[in-house]
Length: 299
Image (cartoon, rainbow, N blue to C red; front, side, top):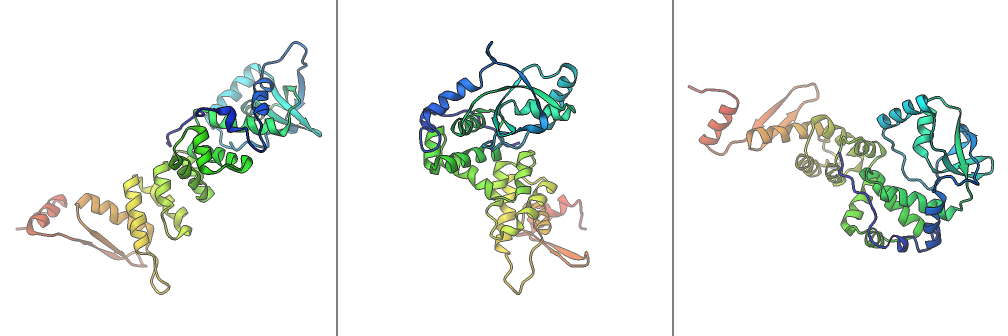
């Protein structure tokens, strides 16, 4: 699984003190997410009318944990009301999206809620703070949070890196992951591809190959170095208009054979399932070593 990094760096207030999100909005987030006051009423809202925070970049939730919460809600109900704001006839979540999702899984039709007045500025601050302070963000979600900062606050990569206390290279590498096809981003979120493997895939010259090669990486269980070798070999073999394309499966097989025999291996695959494998050796001793690996004795 991708290693996860949560928490903001120094100067969180200054992070939002530009353009669309003010320092006041950040301070206001501490108020709007507080527990119910004696003067506040808890109301029942139809779940079909409850919508996510519109500024929320997080879309991936642990299904097993949601099911656990759903079972608890089925048994005990929602013990803590969610907090929402009203927009026309709908209600946008300020706090409690997991409870909403789990309640829907439980088949509930309504949920207890507290309605508070919150502006767009504060909603944006809430979404960004929540995402950057979580300690279980995957690489894609972290990248989406950085992208939201850049888009909404009109910040550069360098400014984001400085404000959240991370290296500029880290921010840049995470943001590059958003250039991957959506299906490959899902593989990262599911823990099937690491950030290192995904970054190596971005080195492919023919971007249309990324999805297919990602499937090969997962299927073959290739490590980062093997992915880098695969990408390098595919780039070297990028066909001109009159040459045939090299199958990523053939390249992956070549890499695995090279690791096993410790020498250059070439796999030539025919279109009808036939082909040949060429194993290089540099001396008689090297040949004997390879034959021993193949458990072959020559009289």
